[in-house]
Image (cartoon, rainbow, N blue to C red; front, side, top):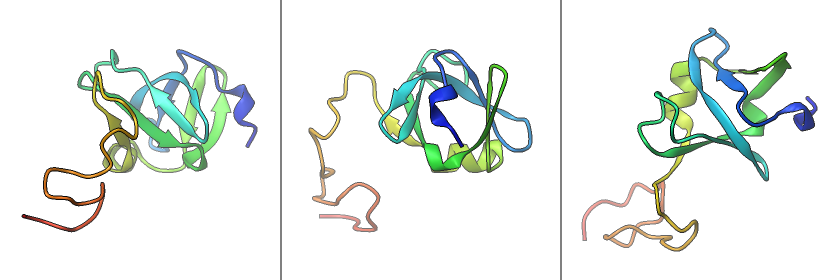
Length: 101
């Protein structure tokens, strides 16, 4: 898959054709989706380029369903500084199973 074909404002859909989001830009090995897309809930979401099956016209098709992609996407809150907070309030690394103090 040639990721150089991915451009801003392309629609991102799951393998089932479900709308996932809209490309903001390619951010290294991730697609950064716009936070203004109705599916985004006001936050930037990220999808790894390994999830891209194909680029078809103005549409990026993923190799997983829309629901699977939304379950797996990373989130960057508005105003967040990437990498500035590598632990949550309990000292857990993002994505870890640690719960509580």
